[in-house]
Image (cartoon, rainbow, N blue to C red; front, side, top):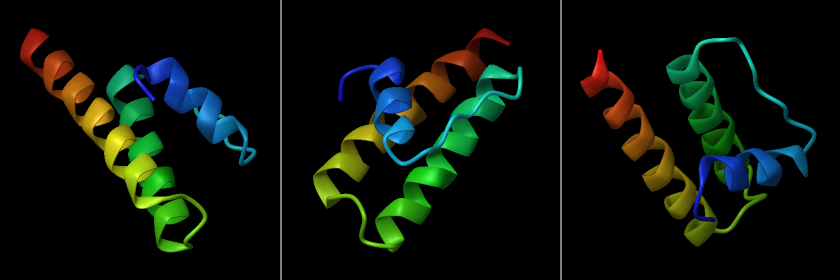
Length: 66
């Protein structure tokens, strides 16, 4: 995974589509969903870490713009 879009497509494989209209909120919900999938051992640690890094980086960028 390299982009937010990749993470969205990855989550879609598990039947998860997240859109609340607030970009930061969307990203935080994606992070929570990934955490739940990881704790349920449905995704690999590498996938989880990669996605988390991308999400947290994007959240940080958006918060700095505010």
